[in-house]
Image 1: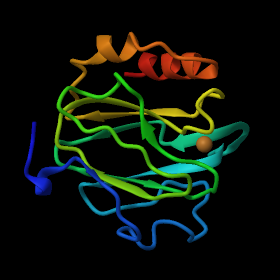
Image 2 (image 1 turned 90 degrees about the horizontal axis):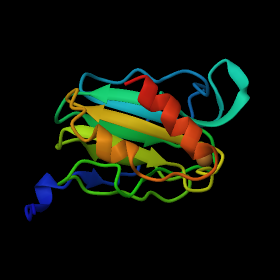
Image 3 (image 1 turned 60 degrees about the vertical axis):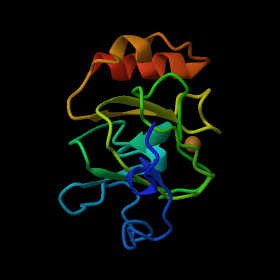
Image 4 (image 1 turned 30 degrees about the vertical axis):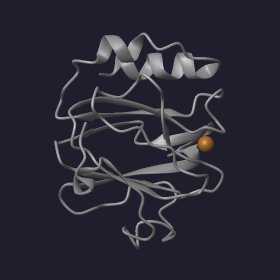
Length: 159
Ligand SMILES: [Cu+2]
């Protein structure tokens, strides 16, 4: 267990990435500085209005120590880690609806997360830190409900 608060994996910030959201980038991935990544919470997929409620990009690969910000580009979404779908030693997170969440990714592995209101309709995503797929079996074995099952399965195929 880590006890040093400066090394917490989960940090919630408001406006830390000022300028990322609300600048008319509804269907593009914002460009961020090196080592910082954005995942947008959207009502519809980029260029595909038939696919509602998505994280963009649905799979994000980052280096160890990189920072990830979930941006509430559209309203009505949140980000929450799925139990059993983060590496051992990583801290779970559970953002509020419409809340921007920023995390420093200090533990390698696969992170599976969901939008709580849209979990059953398949609004889910993955983050892979340091190209480490060693917890893939554990992540895959977590039982999913509704369309989250097929949505996660499709993402696993892309790993
Ligand atoms: Cu959602």
